[in-house]
Image (cartoon, rainbow, N blue to C red; front, side):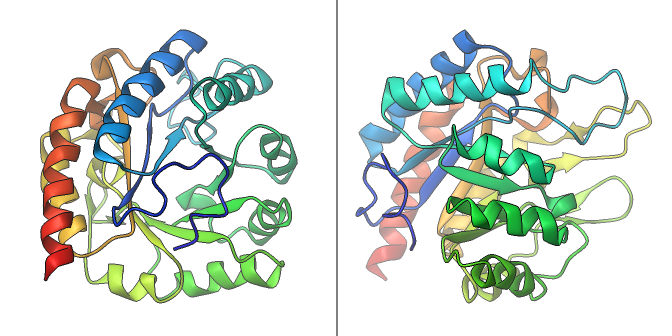
Length: 272
C-alpha cells in the first residue's frame, strides 16, 4: 500500500488496516484537538496507522441553513494544529479547483467527495499538488468505473491515490454496500471502506440526512473480512449535537471497543 509516502504516519509497517477518522466537520479548535487526542490514544495502543479527518467546509448541504463551516482558513489552520500537536497526518475534502492548492498547504491527503469524483478539473488539481488523493466512489458509479478516476490522478503525474467506497444509492433514501466491489477496486488502488457514510439515509423530507449508526460494527466487520486496506469512520463525543452528519456518526466512547474487535478479526484473517 502507498502509506510510506504520507509524512508522520505511524505504524505504517504494521500488518493492520489503516484508519481515517475524526468528526464530519471542524466545528472548533477544542473539539478537534480533543477528538484527535482520544483517537491517537486508541490507535497507538492498537498500532493502527491513523489519519485525522475533518472537513474544513461542507459544500454539499440539503438546505441553505445547514452548517457549512467556521471559515475556510480558520478550519484548515485547526487541521494543521492537530497535525503538529499530535504528529499525525490529516485529510480534508475539497470541492472547487481553487481549494486544492489552499488545502494542500495544511493537510497531507486531499479527498474528492463522491458527488464530485467525475469532475476532471478538480481531480487533476488535487493530483498536481503532489498530495495523496483519496477518491470517494460516487454513489451512482460502479466499482469498475473507478479505474478511470484513478487513471486521471496517475496521468497527472501522481501515483499516490486511494479509492474509498461510501455505499451505493438504494432507492431514494437509503445506501447499500456491495462488498463485491472491494476486490474489484483493490485492483486499481488501495481501497478504503467508509463505514459511517455507507449508513446514511439521505433525501429525508426534513432536509436533514438520517442514518443507522447501530449498524457501524456490522459494516466494519464485513469490510475487514473482505480485506479492505483501510476504514473511514466519522466520530464525535456527542453525535446528537454534532453540526453535520450526527445521525450516522459513531460515538467516540465506542471507538476503542470497535477497533479492538476489528484488530482481532484482521489478525485472524492474516493467519489464514
